[in-house]
Structure formats: structure tokens, C-alpha cells
Length: 293
Image (tube, rainbow, N blue to C red):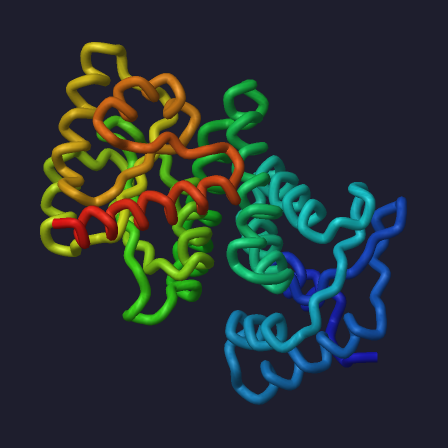
């Protein structure tokens, strides 16, 4: 029907997620009319001299989103998340790239992270902790998903006139993919997100606050340091933020609540809508202090 060989069809699907046919119980591919149309469009781009990767990107961007057929009740985002995890389990770099690329057509950046990429990262992390996947598999998934999240963050940034949030991980924190997801959420709230990355010491926060004058500073901590070190570290971060409001999230934040709140910081609520209320309240309080002075 399309003039494209079966070997090429499988290669396009594996590498680029074009097309994404349904499967029978015996794993046979079932191509829809929409799949055939995508293949023909991809074929025409490639025959016209366009690189296959660029052709796939063009096809995915112009295609109408459609639900993924999977074992999760028809939720396209959950289906994408499952497929990403499965590709990581197979240690299939091309398949992983293809599944991530397919997920990018499902909706807004922040929704893609919260309903597809974020859950996939959490599941892969759980599997690693359970000893069910190797370090190599976890690193492959983190590299592919991390690059994708940074790309989404660049696309999601509001205009230069937007408010600015400075995002960083505690001094001993290495994993920051969730922090990039937080940056996407702040972008949806009209903030420009500046991500400093992992293992950010208080001195680096102080320099960034001095140079960038952010409206708010958001920090993440997964494993809280022991109490004596924690108190000193929180004091140092509080001083580094100067008069900018600051909020701490992550699995280890609750254990540090007494130190954070004593120094005027906020512990992020697990409810995203409440986090936004916390942020806006902190910014309003800052404006009132400035007006009063």
C-alpha cells in the first residue's frame, strides 16, 4: 500500500515511533488507515531528501494525537509510560528513543511529564532499587529521558518578562530529573525556570541569587543529611537566598521541616495545586514587605 518495505517499516517504528501500530495477542502489527497515511508522508519526506530522523519529527508534530492501545484501560499516557519502561527493561536504546518520541505528541509538556515520563522514571527507579534492572539500564533510561525533559523545558519557557524561579538540588543530591519536571510546572505558572542542577552548594545559590534576582528559589532533597549537618546546611541555604522566598521539596524535605520553617522557608505540599498556592502566598508576602519598607 505504501511502497515501503517491511524491514524499513520496522526500523522506522523502532527508531522513531513512526508509525505506532496496534498489536494482536500474538504480537502481529495491525496498521490503521491513519498509520498508512503517516507512512506515506514519512516516505515522501525521505524520498525528497530529508533525513529519516527529521522526517519522523515532522510527521509526529503534524499528526493528530491518538490513544495508545495497551493493557491499562486505554489511557494513552499510562500506555506510553509502560512502553518506556518495557524498552528500558529490554535494554533497547532505539526502542526507548522511539517510545519517548511518541509520548511527545500526547499533549502539553507538563502533562507529558506528570502522566507519562515522570511515572516511567519512578517505576524504573523502583525496579533498580529492587534489583530487577541493572545500573546500565537505569542510566540509559535516565540519559534519554533527561535529554527529553531538558528539551521540553526549553520549549515551555515563557517570555522574558515572566517571573523567574531558580531550581537546584541539595549539595549531595545527584538525581535531578524530577527537578526538571518541577521546572515544567513552574513554566506552566508563568515562571522562567533556571535549573542549576545536582549537588548545588549554598555558595552557588548565593552567587545565582545575586546575579539573577529570582522571584523564588526551589530546592530538592531526596535523602536528608543527619541533624547536625542538616541544620548547618539549611542555615547556609537560607542565608544564600537572601530576601527571596524559598521552598524545599522531595522525599527528604519533610524530615527537614523544623529547620526549614525556623529559617522562614517552605516545605512543598505533595499536592501540586497547594504548591502553587504556597508560592503565590510567599510572593505576595514578599511584595508587602517591600511596599512596607
